[in-house]
Length: 73
Image (cartoon, rainbow, N blue to C red; front, side, top):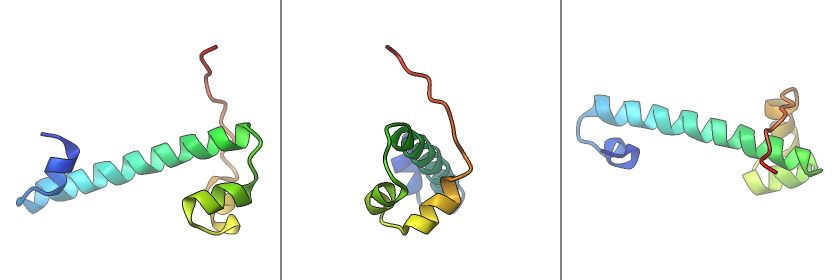
C-alpha cells in the first residue's frame, strides 16, 4: 500500500502514521531544495516566493543549515 493510500485509510492509526511520514518527507525535500537553491545563488526572497512564505520565515527555518550537496558530475 502506498503512503497516499494509507493516508486515506479508514483506520485512523494507519492514516495518521501516513500523514506523519508524508510531513517528514516534505520537510526533508524542502530542506534539500532550499539548500540546492542557495547553492545556485538564489536569494532568500526568491525561495520564499516559491514556498509561499515570507523571506524571514524561510531564513529562520533554513538559514543556519548550510549543507553541502553531493553532486554527480
